[in-house]
Length: 245
Image (cartoon, rainbow, N blue to C red):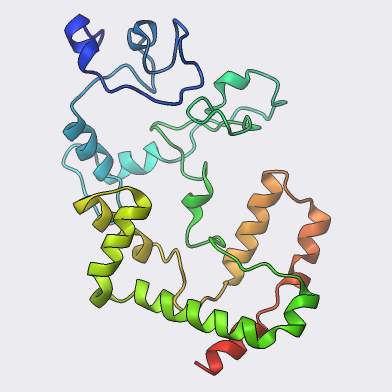
């Protein structure tokens, strides 16, 4: 339904932390915003209908309403305007949902609510999701300590991948993700399907390369640093630790 009436206005879910609290045109909450019709909003449905729609994009899921081609197009980049300084239209750079985030240098547009490749999580498992960073001088003198830590981490990762540990893992997932029941189950299944944590703690060449690529796109490192990145990745500690496991 479009243009919700007074009674429907009171039933619409309230959006928190918009960064525009109290403004007459506050995103998500103002009558002005709710009366607009635009590609990324203006349609109001029940929460269960939103869940049905979102679930169609989960790995391995299908949809009676949307074809696979349509779902692929909805999370693929369709338009990418030229890069512009962050000072240009900062309010139109998809950051109002999280005021603490800096404006994006560019905003790719698709047919859905999010374009794949807009967030680091979109690249799992082709990205380094977690890493252990220490000073080499300290590591050389604390090799045994690192071996012990890595063996414990390896054992914990094994538990994460073991379905026999689901009862304990679901309890932890509920607490960390603030999710309940089926949602915690989906979160745990997602981590396993996407291989968020590799079972042997390894970092593949593809993941390392993709991480460096994204860091350069974000302006965190330049090409010179990227070419030297392999010199600071020391996998010997992991190999030694797992050999003793």
